[in-house]
Amino acid sequence: MTHALNRRHFIAASTTMAFAAGHAQTAQAATTDDHVYTVTRTDEEWRERLDPISHYVLRQRGTEAPRTGPYWMSNDVGTYCCKGCDLTLYDSLHKVDLDRGWTFFRHARTDTILTDIDFGQENADDPFAQMQAMMEAHCRRCGSHLGHIVALPEMPGRPLHCINGFALRFETSKA
Image (cartoon, rainbow, N blue to C red):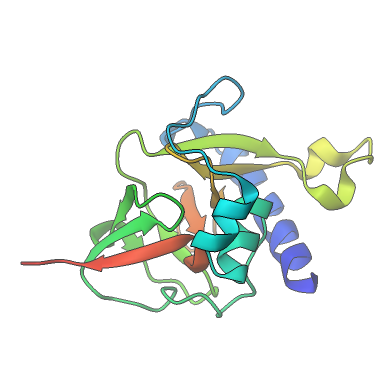
C-alpha cells in the first residue's frame, strides 16, 4: 500500500493546484451519485472477467505501483478501452509521455468519463480529509475506477487524466 499512499499524496497536491488554477472545468465531469451504469456485474462475475490486479484497480479503487502498468511508456497508435466493459475511452493521439510511472492523457473521448471526489480511504474518519480530496475518474458505462484527474508542473494550466494501465485494454489502430 505504500505506492498507493504516495500516489494519493502526489495526486492530492496536484489536483489542488488544478482547482486553484481555475482549470477544473476542462475535465469532462459529471457526478456518479445518480448515474445508472449500463454494465453491471456481481463481484463474482467481475473476478471471473478480470485478473487480480485489474480487479483491485477497477473494482476496489486501487492504484497500481508506478512503472508496473503496461502502457505508461507505450507510443503505439490506437485506442485505450475500459478493461471492465470495453468502452473506448482514450485515443493515443491524446496520450502524454511523462516519466512518472502511470499513463497520462490530455483528455478522454466525449461522454466516456465520469468524475467524483475521492476523499481517500486512509483518511475516511479524518475531519481534514477534504483537504486531501482529489478528482477520481470512472468509466461511464460500468463505473470502474480508472485513475484521477491531476495537474502537474510539466503541463502547467492543463489537468491531465492519470490512468492506471491495468484499468485499460489497448487496441492497435488498423490504419
